[in-house]
Length: 79
Image (tube, rainbow, N blue to C red):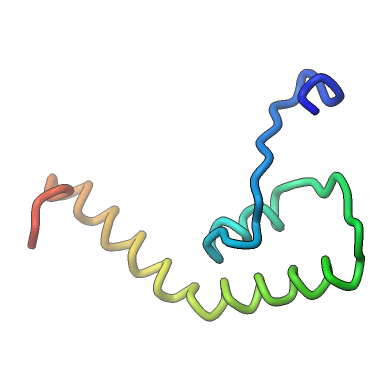
């Protein structure tokens, strides 16, 4: 597959069991190469988006807290 799309980098992963955050990022920025079943693809994308947006607040809070700990020199130290 890599030889077909040179000089682009290719990362192939199964999304069925990936985290909602990862799936959403792939759907937002990735490129679909093949879809065997368009209705299943559309259903997967819809469900992945709903799961991501259900958890979006938690992801934002986690990232905000992690940045605060990094800036304060407390990353890796238990509160």
